[in-house]
Length: 427
Image (cartoon, rainbow, N blue to C red; front, side, top):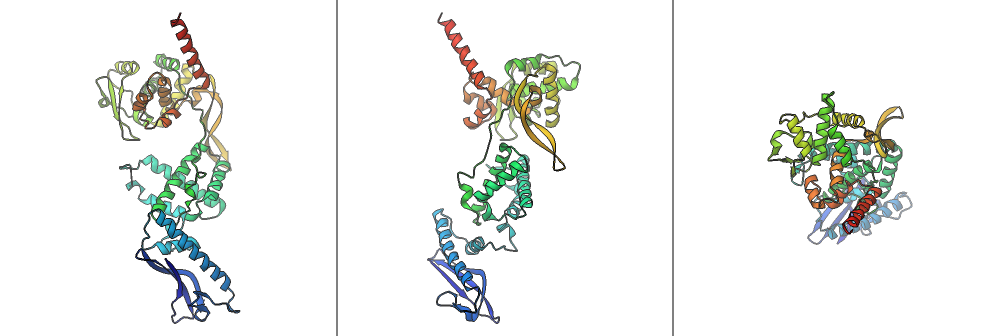
């Protein structure tokens, strides 16, 4: 392995300092360092600027060249250890990484948000696990990019690829928590996207800080206090007379279908008659593309009979989330509970919608996610986890258990009932 500095004399008095890097048959490349010197001030033998009194910048240039040499060798060894073969542009990109020089023709190889914008240009054509990336996922990407650009504007700086280190991570978290007033679960989704982009940049061979791999560069999350409806509360919703309101009656029936199938709102709101066959509901889930088969609950059979074989008419997610709060309020699901709901506040002259934690009436906290959580929670402990997961579509038990919202008190009551039942059986 060899690193050599040299100049090429031309008609001009000044010449660029080049670097050549070669190692056996693996690599032999040269590129400009960005420094220029007078011909007479360069020492070809020592490969540095001569120690002349009149050359004021000699120490700065020579020190930088020495540091660059060390950096090139270090980066080359790192790449080899990762089994990454140096491509045609390896030397140029590595020098750019060291000096922070921007390639005018390829700014995405220097600036982080510029790279993301270029990535987003054809993200809809990319595949995830063999399938096109969902529109909703692309929207999440765009939101994360917007937060990064807002961060740059707030601190009046442009993030370069090698700036995405632990120092950036801590500053970005602080900004999102204090300036944007976001909770950790929302922030965690942005960090997950940032780590994903860093990995792709790394694979492309561009100069990215390796600190994105550090254990402290973590996807933050907080324990949520999401609510679920107990079996008794679901029965109250099912039995309530909404004959005075077609809108609430239709919403209640959709709500019951969600509660009794464990499907995501994007799936149960688009169910059609063709999804029902021989007392089973079969649907390909929109999010994962998996085929799910669910036996029809008696409540759903009753709804179909009431509607003469027809399903409730579909409504938008937004209307569903709004109307089910009315449904639960009228049913009387109004005890005070801990949780979080979306509220709109004026921040710096702008209306901003954020989740606010506190104590609220339970009906205020009901949302489309309540269906899935209630389904999983009410069946937990009564059926094997894998059986429930086959319906909910969870691939990992750890993810499934996040949906289980029983409190410690409720677990204690379950144990109390179990002991009392055993005591009666044993006489």
